[in-house]
Length: 238
Image (cartoon, rainbow, N blue to C red; front, top):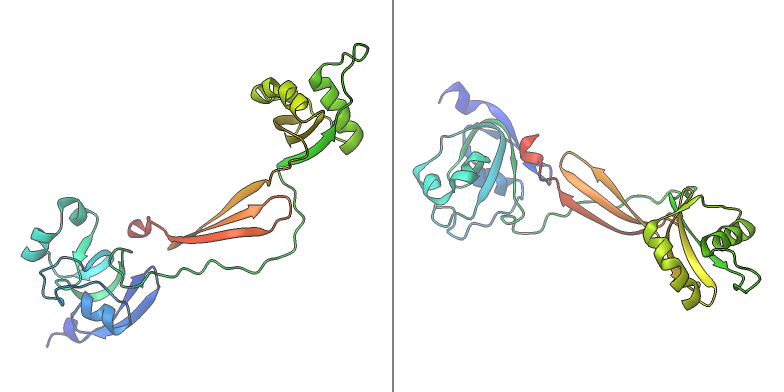
């Protein structure tokens, strides 16, 4: 046996991060099975079904086989796809197991410890009661709103969004002079009738090397409402 065959090397399987040490050339399919990475292989690994597709991110592997040329598209070959049952690895390598191939869904941990924090959202919502317009009090609706916000909440918006301005008069009358107002800095960006305060939501994104974690957050309380982890589609590109 040659020195290359006797050399020990490591194969890393993404996105799970599982890895194994091997000696001599080994098929990707066999290497995956040894470390518990389940792959769909309907034909039993004899190169007939074309289901055991993996992406070789880096590493020394055997040349593309005739079977792979038949079962893989030209675009897949360009993206680094190989059939695990046909590909031998000769040295350190890193491969990506696509979700469509994994026998069980990859569980990506996104849970985190909730830390107390002072919430300072960009968008804030206020409920105000406006004095009803009369023949004597003919202040414009936006001026009336500014005065009510300043008196009730200590804030005085400088401008109002065009769409919010168009909706302001109907909203005030529909809510019988009570309305909810969303402010971003010194600008009124939305209005709605009555004291129907809406939940202000924000999306926090944690972009990692192998996964992307998303957190839906209530901007009023800082509480995480929901979370989701997905594989980073840029893994093959480093």
